[in-house]
Length: 79
Image (cartoon, rainbow, N blue to C red; front, side, top):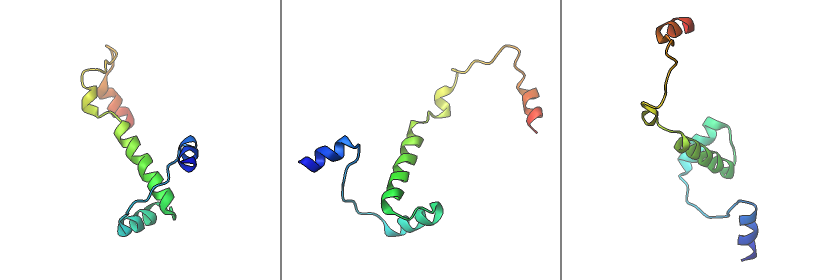
């Protein structure tokens, strides 16, 4: 019980999980991260970041441009 309380206070949780070894190797190769703990942590951060983003379709009709905004002129400036 003491370990669980201490781990929760530090905002960490010790657990056992079964991981796909090939997936871990590929993730390590792509990221350069060498430990399983950091790979899982980075994966969770990426998942949370992705899920927190609002889909563009949710913004439809909610963005109002200035009346004199010329989107065609803006396109030609960036090219």
